[in-house]
Amino acid sequence: MRFRLVAAALITAGASVFAVATPTAAAGTAYTGILPAPVSVRVERGAFTIDRHTTISAGPGADGVAGYLAGLLRRSTGYPLPIVRGPGDIALTVTGGSSEGYQLDVSSRAVTISAERAAGLFAGVQTLRQLVPVTRPWTVPAGHVSDAPRFGHRGAMLDVARHFFTVAQVERYIDQLAQYKINVLHLHLADDQGWRIMINSWPRLATYGGSTAVGGDPGGYYTQAQYREIVAYAASRYITVVPEIDMPGHVNAALASYPELNCDGVAPPLYTGTDVGFSSLCVGKEVTYRFLDDVIRELAALTLGPYLHIGGDEAHATSQADYVAFMNRVQGIVAAHGKRVLAWHQVVSATPRPTTLAQYWDTTNDNPQVAAAAANGTGVVLSPANLAYLDMKYDPATPLGQDWAGLVEVSDAYGWDPGTYLVGAPPAAIRGVEAPLWTETIRTSADIEYMAFPRLPAIAELGWSPAATHDWPAFRRRLAAQAPRWRAQGINFYPSPQIPWPA
Image (cartoon, rainbow, N blue to C red; front, top):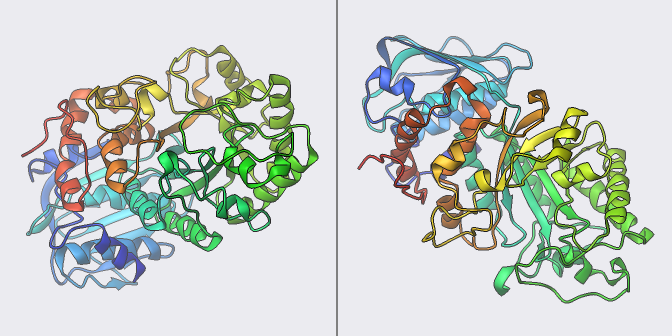
């Protein structure tokens, strides 16, 4: 039942979640319009029609994806679409294995999606969504898709610290991410302006440190039950939540909540501005590490995935020697609680553990220190601010966002190759891409959508699709074809003049 309710919430009354993804129903155009671009496509004759007699067959391990698909199709078509155990018209099969890829076959008699893992099956459903038209007859053109992701980490980051977003708002964004095969949601949970997760052993972090936001806007925080709901909801969309507590800088909300975390024992006032680099945990006090051990222990217990993000950027108020000692010690605390470290790329100036990932956000593709760490075995997730930051303005007139890293139009977000971007880094060290959305100027879901769409699908394609499919003229046509879906779902996208949007 949950899948049906979620699907219904995604669209306006009478609109289809299977909104047309191509400007024509012709089979060739439909298959060449898939976004992200698949590894291979073969167009065939005929079409499969979904009608009131259509059934969905769920093989072992496919129940969750079948429920999700049934919920979407029932809302779109009004047909019952029962889930059956035996043969069915739309068959979902998990074969066993580790690949996140899938095979989609459509004939005039059946639709079959098979994958080694349920995550691959879910990815195949997202492709199927783009092949079903917006209005009846509900015909899917015949063809074959063979597909698998280029990178394992295909992420988006949402900053809930500068401005707070409710569980429902985060879940709405999760549904939008899932459509484009994003599999990581990085939540920036704490910063100078607010602490957004209840830590039971240090409750004032949330109740006091979470009471503010940028510009004096209302704050907020997630109870652990609410946070578990977000994690579970994301998992139902095959998205792993990576929580971030930034440290040793970006910590004014924590320092204001507990005086003993300050070197002088005096708590600063709460902060609602947008400056960075002025706060630091007291690296020389043991209470700092007792505090972090408690925070990391509680976060680890709430985290299904292997990674905790410990920040590490813009620690201008921490000396380099203290920074190195701090980051090395905290990496050990994370490991002691059974998790691996993800951190902003400044972590390479300390001693990254073999399992630590560095998230690169600089505005240049030439960083010898990060490249050397990558050559020495440190994995890298790429989020160059001048290409992948969704909070950068599109042009000087964009009403939201910032421009410190430059203006980022859709062609900028799409116009780079993660595999060759970082000079001197071996391609094997690049674990994927991530599109961060900082929220100093972002207050509503409509704001999130305006900044994320249409650039988020560009980053998603860089993460999923083979380098050989990378083609701007083809991409802008496929991106334009997403507009009817976004309109049906009520997504407040920016109508970039670079894209030939349909009327």
